[in-house]
Image 1 (cartoon, rainbow, N blue to C red):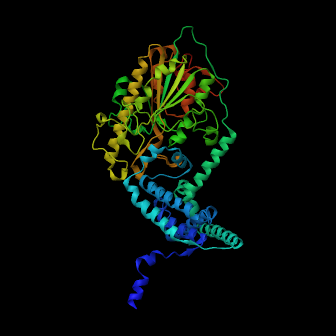
Image 2: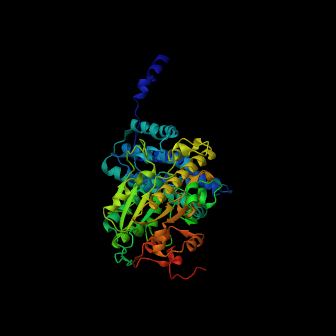
Image 3: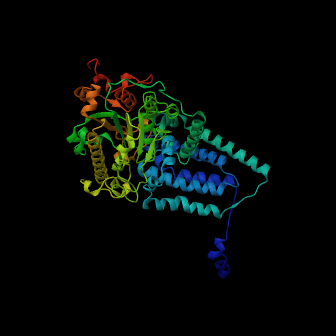
Length: 557
């Protein structure tokens, strides 16, 4: 008898066993799995907000758990069918395992902006987020359940019955989710009203809904096209024989104001700039907490004051207005593109350059963007505005953003797994990368100062800041309404050659005084137009940082 049992339970016979399940059953089990294993960040945030600590905490948690399961089942019920359940659910398991890992490790929120950032990342950028720490969660919560999924046999059903069962499942899921939320409505609604961002932690609903919104927005943008702005732009007449002007706009990456030496940081992370003494703006606010938001916003006339994502993305940019005025523009990029700011205009990418003086097998230092610039501009001549989009402090691999000679602050975090490093190591590596940006800006200024044929100027403005472990947050991209100042306060500096400031009649001491006032990325669009003497109906003098210090301006109060 025992021999028969052992024969039946031997491993090959067990491995051949394939249980049968319907698509709806698989979707329900997957929903329970996601609710239990993929929503740790949500439960921690809900607990931190105090929603689970009151006398009814257990009841609220139970209602939210049931609602999450039912909402996930509703989404899966729409997406999955007999032909897609295995391949699509496998993909969802793998993506959800990765999403849950990154949310827990870095404190990211998978809202529309973050999903768009992920979609626009290239292989190098995405590769820097891959680490050994990702292997175990991917195996446990992605690969293993996927293998079990493919062992299942799908339960056959006649088409009519399959449709009725599916409609019943969707109806039941909707009803249960509504009932669960209604039973705890007062507490859950208070949580969602006071902490709207928390909905972006419910996984996988967060990235599925955001992905759908991104697809709809992109589709609508293609249909609408881009609205022209500033087509009436023209240059103010200048004296005969005046030198052509060159303005370089350096768009920084992930440098936060708190670690900027010129702002009074405890470390002098900007020693080269301190010697040059450019005009520094210590109280500068970013338009967004991610490149995807900030870069289009700062080149738009609408800005954060009247923020309208569709309007900004559906309109032309500052560079188009400059071109309408007859000023040549050029975008040089050491990142993943200009986020449509330079669409249809001159663009050069150095992301995959192989110049041995500045590049290794993975990335180039930002100095590569200065190569051949003068010759490139001489082809067309006249006034020019050049944008240099830095790689800068892009994380989490801060240790790769500076040469060894700038490794001044030690010990450093020499891995992309920030969770394995102390906060001191992370900050040291980050500050070393700020030193690299300081050196790049100083080199660019010296380059411009040596251009005898042009009046030259430079404006540097970082796109957004960065969290370095404060309150458990890393990197950036937290929804703007709750983003910490570490992600929204950025450095800005200006430099002008004597010829440029003299030709414009600009009072530099006045500008230094004005620089102490609060400013934001909303000022960039109008300040550049004012500095380059472009007249257009979209220009707003009140937002021009230079206007109070120009000839004829009323003395600032």
